[in-house]
Image 1 (tube, rainbow, N blue to C red):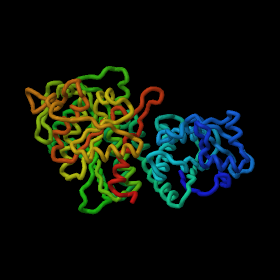
Image 2: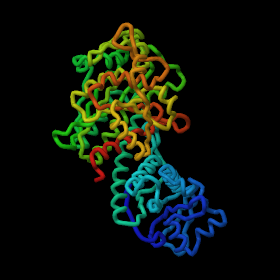
Image 3: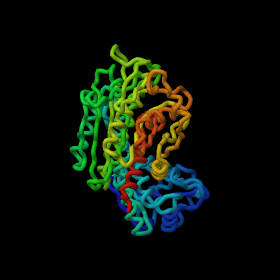
Image 4: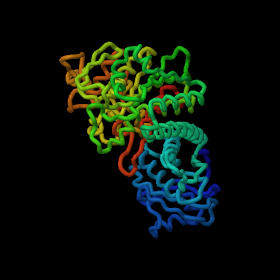
Length: 499
């Protein structure tokens, strides 16, 4: 997609389609006002007759309006002006792109950029536009015999702006947005692939392909024999019943100073989760191919960072394996020794994500990270607590937690902080080992984070539970690409890439 900016009167700009807005109270946005004036009051007449509406997300295409240079005008309902914020802006844009999908339009200019949107600026408006367009354009076709797509033909999208400063900011936002979309698309693609294709070996090959494409990025893959040598008994206990070999993928992007400590992202990569001996029920078990969406998200974030060429040092660690039942599989009641030396009583083999993460988090600390963040589809309890809207956030550092929450708000990829503490940790008590891998049903998302916190005492650490946000079910089933926007925004801000 090619992005550009334009200033001046919307009625005098030649384009295949001008996208303008109408509020619920009948007020025209800036671009619509200029189109109305230039066309001799056309939009006012259509509004009066009820042919165009200010209802949020309702789009009306007006072909060949007289006395203006654009070939079409697309009027999009913006809802109540007093409530017009980021979500409304994105819904209006998505409606516009949806309306254009039934046309042959290849170039358009959006003037929705010109009106004030609460709590944001020109940079983010363009970034949201790129991401909204990316959501509309993404299709999973890799496993289909035909990948014909009769959807959106758009190749060039412009933003109407009022100043050069806004234009420069918009182009930066679109560039970053496009890089974030690339990372989201990779995360979605990896998540949507079936488990017989997207294996631990496939993930490691995908990481290698990225390293070949981006010069500051290198990749190392640790094999099971390497994990045995390191004492990663927790991780290896999960893969014990599987035929597919486990991997620990280490991606290293060096965009910052040589002496700058890296940010380290760790992503849970269970490419299929049967639950092991604690076997899951059959309904919706096919969705357990999505249990590697944490891995997909951090790999996708690495792609975005490398595409933006952020001046930061970033490492991505992906512990990846399958959780399968067999005669060699770990049993409930087994005790394993983690890389940290701590012993774990495995009461439930379906609480496997924390077992592969704890060894990866221990390994990560050899790099003395400036911040350590793990991302995982960890608990159904988080879905019960927060639904499919917010990712769960837990942290041992208030500043890091607030930085991630703020990044989520800016990126429109929100998280909600949950508590931790000694009372929750007590639920992990074991009579036979240092602690158990589960703490009962109550506060399950929190006790899972408390388990991970036992391996991150010396780090500035945060945990993102994305079990409710990483994919959608139902007729829109598929990976969402979250929380790539949140993580990318956090890294952009940390790198000072907007300065």
